Length: 259
Ligand SMILES: Nc1ncnc2c1ncn2[C@@H]1O[C@H](COP(=O)(O)OP(=O)(O)OP(=O)(O)O)[C@@H](O)[C@H]1O
Image (cartoon, rainbow, N blue to C red):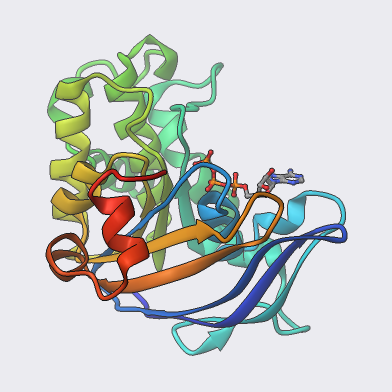
């Protein structure tokens, strides 16, 4: 079930290096939120704190709170592995498991999460997830073939199918289209639009037109100066951000005057 995300005064560290400072925001369930900003301002770092992937890096830590569906995901009793399983993530480069078939790729996460699936349960999840990722018709006759045999755009949709196969509460996407051609990009953007009926989606993108096309809300991150931590400058409805942002700093970035 799609869940709301609340972030309160989050500081994000790599060892002693404060990479991102003081982020607070509220993300609505069943919406698409885009993060934009210049390279190095911490968009990807912040995204990875929303499913505790950040802590996979030795010495990495956060201060502040992140709640998903009202639950503090950093509470001491919470297992980070369980958080990562509930919150799907799609990366810049499609990363199907190279030795697995299309069918097994879709089920990879679902098999980790549940007791042994029966063949009919597995078939149902595979068809539902591939249909949800708009890939079913293209692959239904070759489910036993390797996932790596698909085109780049199809592989990325396969990775989205794998992410939604576990019925995640939130779907995080880190520049999911940056390795794709315009037609595949458009297919993924259409898919994001469809998926927000069921999921809370957060996407990092370098492409401001893409943020404007796919998102309901946009967060603009920036650095005060080189070596300073990144911070959230402005967070608002996407239409507002791209037509009448509140701050001159956002206006300058959106209109291409810097960044
Ligand atoms: N594994 C890491 N170890 C140490 N510092 C890191 C690590 N990953 C990122 N950083 C630093 O954290 C800061 C934010 O980086 P991040 O990649 O989150 O920015 P970004 O806005 O996503 O950039 P880009 O748009 O180029 O992907 C940068 O100063 C970066 O050098």
